[in-house]
Image (tube, rainbow, N blue to C red):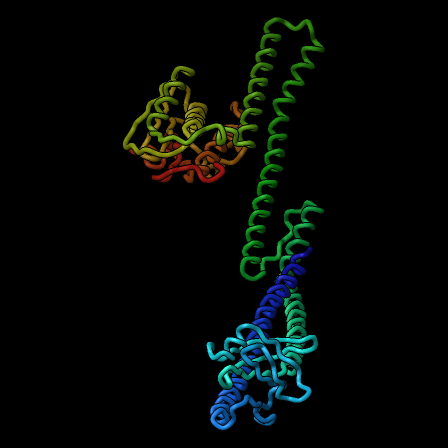
Length: 458
């Protein structure tokens, strides 16, 4: 069942419930008022007859009925003797039922008695009052007129309730149409996106209230998916471009070995070394591509309270053992952060590897840790100002570094890790304090928030 039908039927059900409650209340109230009116009439007539009966008892020793006109508008009247005998007071009138409570009133042991009675054809409202010693007077009023009135009222209330339900259903249908219209447009747009796989299709976000909020959330989600797809496509394109060079080199060397099996030993060894280097670079590139595309470390690494200085010491010690170069760590401040240690250790390691790669041969590399920031400084040619905003892009390599080994993904991974922790990255040149303007190296680093914690999904 569609949402429009559900809203319309829901309003109809509410109208039916409210109508039924109101109709029941009106019917019960009217029925009670009519009965109370009849009871008041009977009680008033009974009081009048009781006063007449007292005067008659002084003059007439035998029980006699009041005149027919004095019991109007009663439809039946009779005298009941204490021994159960009944004397009709209206010729041709119906016989009223007599029970022990009526006999008690006749025996002067009870007050008046008011109740509803019926015979085979009609219902009556009957009152029994003491008339004289050993005698009670019963008068009854026909309830047919009241019952007919209630029957007509019941029919009218039913019709009004049904009309109210129909009107509520119609209004609900119209109102639901207005409510559902933006939802339907949103559904059609979503189905169009699913059918065409075109994430650039705009979603209608002009709906009211929660509908508009839902549409805007979906639009944001689709925009994020479109951005993610564009990034994936760009990553694949960049990766395919980067893979061509090592694959071409590998194929050329393999073809050389196939065509010239009798190469001199020195040339064969050089070709094999090239194959080994290219194979290693392909392996590193594949690993970095997988990590960059899947962000595997973000799911394997648990949150911990860390000190960036301690992580920098670990990275520097490993770099010294691996390269034999001088890597120093200077700590100017400390701060405890909540982060994923393996991710940040990888980020610092990439910065150190980048500095070792571009620093002058044999020159030292300095790692400066200041609380929540890490900066790695080298003694190299520096970074061209035009390249500084681009060094963190995937596969980007400055013109002067394109012949150097590497995939061009190290700093891109650093930026991804830092941004997932809510931080920022930077790259700048170092200048000689004695000769302003002369570049003596480069500094690349990042800063994390004081209360750093990975963003959701990071």
